[in-house]
Image 1 (cartoon, rainbow, N blue to C red):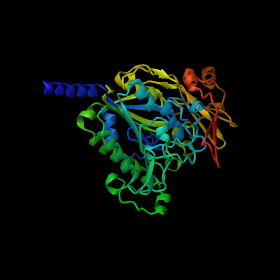
Image 2: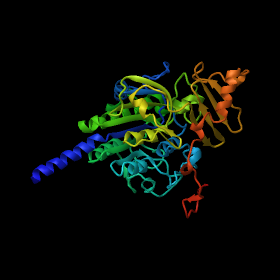
Image 3: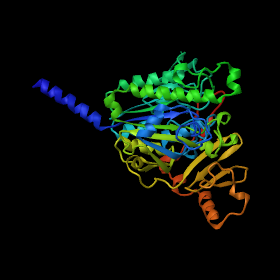
Image 4: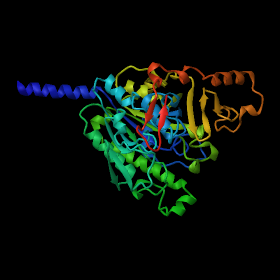
Length: 452
């Protein structure tokens, strides 16, 4: 009788595990749509990405996903479901500190699932502010398991500092390989449903030659002068190496778990200007509010995706990943803060969750925002004239409509965008607003960050 009860308990535990899907969120660093296969921009040289293309063939490719033009604001938006205007994270330097009292995606999943899910963030963090010595900060803002690089990049992909739950040690393992190894180990150690955010540092600078067996760019010279003279093949090789490691990650997830996993791949901002390809102009890449700076690839496949080999034109913001991931864990959350779930689009073709998308930046003397609806886009930067484009007729923003006289329809669209389009920009609730004055680090002898 005891053996029968034990067998029943094991079967019940396995069934409960199988009924709650896992979620794997993979984020690429500094990868816009121009180097990605199957995205428009026919003049571009595409990276060889067989694993991502397999995901595209078996799932959904999203064509109109907006991120912020720099990495920390995008990561904060995903982690909180809020725009930077509500979190204070607006650039990767002096405004890159996510406050510890934010309810993060990991905390939300833990709370809404009553502890059913285990969660992790493995790879690039870049949300601790400038020169923050606290290696445990990711854990303090709600990440149960954190392993990766705390800052925005490394000087050398073979020589960097690895932090695991507050303990930092030097590493000589290739960064992209090590992040994959850590993700494999963590996933294979789970006995509960899981959410794993894998944040690759690739293809962020320094551009370099990855391990030879992981890319198809050939026998490139590895000296810095050659890299500087023509960085594009090295950038593509880094993307291909990441695709290789994505494939290795998926191959090492047990088959039963992989079948029960939804996988989302997304970029964090546009392509760096030194490797940005036509038809984008070089001034329109990473760091700008132009399409080359804010449009990113996104692909979804797996357990929660019922549409195969389809493209989705809906306007999506990276902040929407917050509510979407929560809904994939089984809790209804069609909208929270600035996050609108697109879970239904994974299952059936239907109406978009929002009518416009929004991006923002505050770097140096360039502060402003961009907002678009299905047809028109407005870019507003402090101290500069507004720019206004028809993205259907002019997808690469070569013709500012303010160079002429706006038609009645164009003027009406401009007025709507100028006022925030709709509640997707200003939508918030009381918990979104930062209502206290916080100083970090405290005490400090060199620098402080103040939010109110």
